[in-house]
Length: 161
Image (cartoon, rainbow, N blue to C red; front, side, top):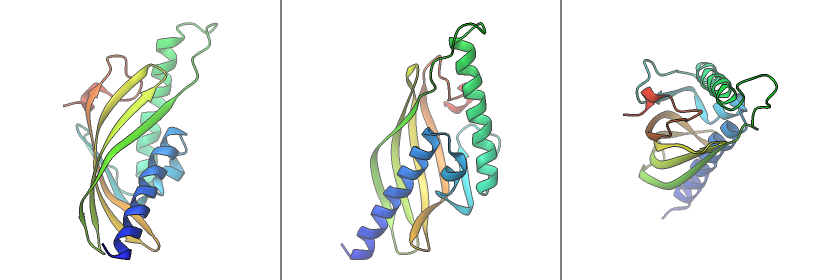
C-alpha cells in the first residue's frame, strides 16, 4: 500500500467522523463542510436530493426541526412536563473502501442511530469522496435507512424501503 492511500483512507475516515459528530451536535453548517461545495445528499425515498452545502443545511434543518418537535410532542404532552434532553448518536461501522484511486474513493459503511428513545434507526451510507486541497470530501452521499423504530424521532416512515 502506498503512502498516499494510507493518507487518503485516514482523511476519509476523518470526514466521516466530522459528518456524524457535527450532525449529532446539530452543528449543521459544520456538518456541511464534509461535502464538496457542490456535494449531493441523496436519501432513499426522498423526492429530491439537495445539491450544495447551503441546500444540504436547509434540508437537514428541516429534518432536525421536525425531529425535535416530534420528540417533544411524544414525550411532553403538556407544557408543564419537561421534554427529555435531545440525544442523537450515530455509530459508524464496517467502513469499506470499495474503490480508491488518487482521484476518487467509493466507500460503503453501516450506521446505527441512538436517540433518547434508544435504538432509533439504522442503515447504510454509499459515498463518493474526492480530494479537495488536503482533505477528502463527499461529492455524493446516498443514505439508505433499512429499519426505523415505530416511535423514531428522526427517520420518517418514507425513508425505509
